[in-house]
Image 1 (cartoon, helix red, strand yellow):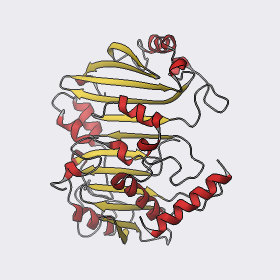
Image 2 (cartoon, one colour; image 1 turned 90 degrees about the horizontal axis):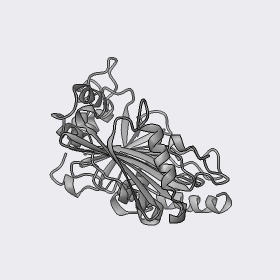
Image 3 (cartoon, helix red, strand yellow; image 1 turned 180 degrees about the vertical axis):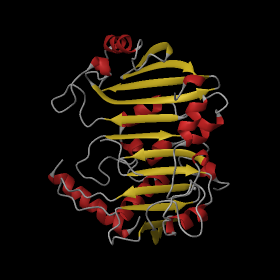
Length: 342
């Protein structure tokens, strides 16, 4: 761990003593891909990359994130509708020059984004450092005259087998990329404007994400039983999303209960996952309650009844079932893969 990261950690701890999310919006080719955390041709161990909520912002409690395995999605293209395939192909990475079909995991977190897959690492570095062209070119077709993104980056440092790039201008880069074999990480600067912590520069954030993903430092799944329980229950096929709440629903500082909207009193975390199994796609909705005694299957059934017809969020699913395991409730349903993503 670098000196910068050590200093960041000390600042975080100090501010946490004085004062104590949502997904952030942030717009990897090797034979050893299966050895890379989160790699292996799919979402894999995506939880390895999820860092503790206060790793960069000292007063943050709870975390949200979402991930997609495009290689898994496109490997099932024969069962998907043409519209679903076209929508997926609309995802582009103009600053990186990589094709969405080659992305095994695209994981969005509050302060960053982790992309794993099969791509030419040196070509990605060249794309980042090339001057932008006036007319953007399609993803994957960058030329020596410039890249297809809107920003030029320059090499800043190396860290744990990654090369880190920052914007050529301004002096304090609002974001940074780390490029390694089979993995690209993008992180944004954390200003900490609403608390007593110092800002965390983008290169420090990207190093912290590398520490979590590669070395297990500040890894949330190892320190939070709620997150571990949630993600253990979720499949990791094509898509996954997760939220650990700072306050349970119905508590003084938590969200209000709204059963038709799927907000149940006592819930501290929830997630959703989709897995394609040939001509059938399975969807999961997982709710983790604060304790087993808070579980109310009647509320869950009421939510299902309010949403499984008409324009309800569950109307496209059949064979709906409810399973309770301790403080966790999982609702599972299926649909024809031809209808998935439409």
